[in-house]
Amino acid sequence: MIDSKMLVLVVEDEPKLAQVLLDYLSANNYATTWLADGREVVKYFSDRPAHEQPDLVLLDLMLPGRDGLEVCKDIRKISNVPIIMITARVEEIDRLIGLEIGADDYICKPFSPREVMARIKVILRRIPHPEEGVSTPSTALTHLQLDESRFEARYHNQLLELTPAEFRLLKTLADAPGRVFQRDQLINHVYDDQRIITDRTIDSHIKNLRRKMSLISPEDVIRSIYGVGYKLEL
Image (cartoon, rainbow, N blue to C red; front, side, top):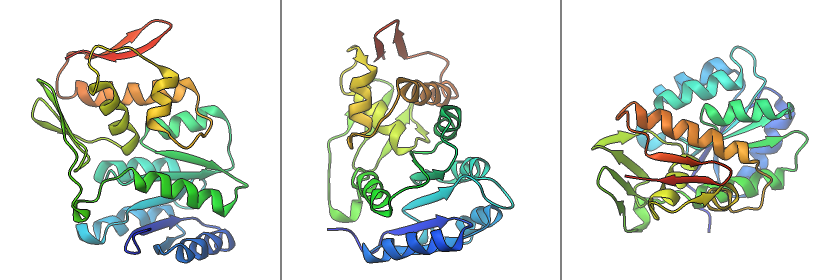
């Protein structure tokens, strides 16, 4: 059953499209908020206490005031909320740029609202909710601790600010340190809804993980195995 308290922020400048999304979200028992200007998003986050923050953001790429890529960067500076970007620009470079700055998923126009709802449900199912009393054993290695029940990652006792996709990818590697994972295996762990994801998407996530971990420690613990995939060595 969907938690009726979950809030989805829709950032879309086309009123008719926004209304369709809002109607479908409401029909699926989500609370909703709509913003039409990219410049309003950061203020929306900063004006609300933690318990009133959105659980997910539907973010259009082409927005007045501030485009979706810039807005995504702004959000990632203050929040790890899941972000699904909506775009009519289907070029792979746009997809990769979006993933590199922290987007969790892409949906290309034209789309079915039912597809959007399905994507939302998949992402929100992956995020544990402490109020449900779920307690999942943590992954604990010498310098890395991953607590799935809190969706929290610590590296050398410092908090890693990870997106949901990055957390799932790192946990997959950390659950079997030393094991080499092929890219398609990592895709299956990070995205379980059979969407079409390229190897370069995983490479982008790995690049982000390395960058964030390097800010804490210079050691490169995610090793590339040429022609095969990746492994974690701690």
